[in-house]
Length: 483
Ligand code: NAP
Image 1 (cartoon, rainbow, N blue to C red):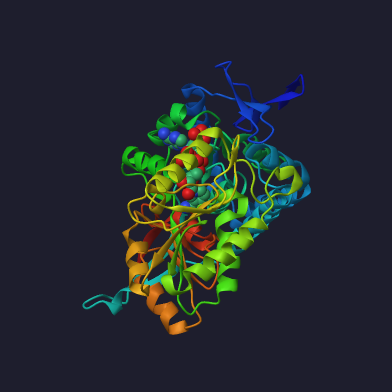
Image 2: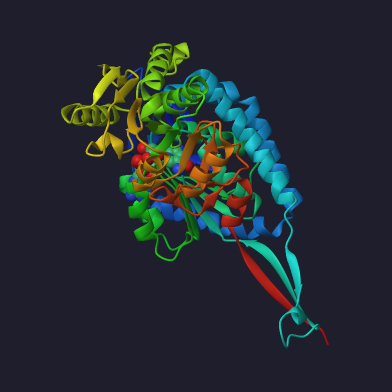
């Protein structure tokens, strides 16, 4: 249910199959990062309402786990169809709410529908296994183990703001197809997009109580949710600090964490520099660098550094800067705090001797794409995740030095290696402590069925369609003792 007063819509939360206003009487204003107006209000729900949501989910999950996989698949296929039907409406909201271009927002919705369909198909083709006892010394042929996957129960899904539909559905779809219920806490900036996505699920006829949307600031209801006794698994994507705190509170609850990154783009002496620059620019600056897998530092061999920097500079000048409504690549950051942080990182680097190649200009939340050369290990920007359009360039004298700097990071999400020598590419890839290495390509999540893994401060556990289904189920063994 949505009410609109003076053109500002107030969105309900979704509890036990109904759209409701919170008893708290409080709402949260959602301010567009580029229009700077309130584009809607969401409910700041109470702890009692969290309890109601969890109880509804627990109750609904029992019946859902009982129905056949084919039945569950029908609801999810309907959801995907509904999202495709609503793509324009949802894309418009994503654009206004998180400041992403309409084209990218629409792609996000369509990619999500594809994700849901692939998830269903993957689940339909996953089978358990059986084992005979006599393969172990002294074991008997009369013992047969049947190993199957069963749901965990109620999954708490917490996504970040930057892909408010895709990263939410990447948790909901595997949870639901494998028989779980879901408590979905959207990022506050991104909550309207999340609610719209659930409207599509509601239209698809999802059984009452199976999915509940709890809106409210993570700092207010987050801990209560994470520590709730009715939650059986948590799938979280967001910043490393938030994720680390959450992990401490979650105790023995199974957790998958997808956290921040500082993905290096390693450019070897023999790389095709034009090609490398193309990938680095799109990797670093798409959606103003607000991607977990953005290239967040370049480690380039000193012999080709000048040439690479010149090409990067030319390419940066071609980037469109402005409003997402005009389809720009560089758009205002999610809020002014995010822009302030980038400025602090740039100022720190400049104070310690870095050179601005281009950029270092700000208008409100809009930070112009900034290239910093001669960055060294004393500078914060060499190590911290900016989540914005600033790219530090660190010159190295060997591939080994690049690997050492890459591995010194607290993060370990992805890395790119640019070289024409496939042996060298593999040798570097083998030494880098990250979840995935991209050879001659930009760091990125996807295609969505590839395993997606963060190590060290970048996460715990694995995502990627099959991995996500596995993380939201557990193995159960039934042993048949034949007479
Ligand atoms: P964030 O501030 O950590 O927030 C992420 C989510 O956590 C939001 O839904 C937030 O809700 C919620 N939250 C905040 N405090 C909480 C608490 N105490 N308990 C439970 N939940 C809480 O991150 P963000 O700014 O949205 O996203 C940017 C970060 O996400 C970057 O570091 C980026 O690298 C990372 N990221 C990682 C991946 C990946 O796959 N590895 C993908 C995308 C983004 P509120 O919005 O209500 O505060």
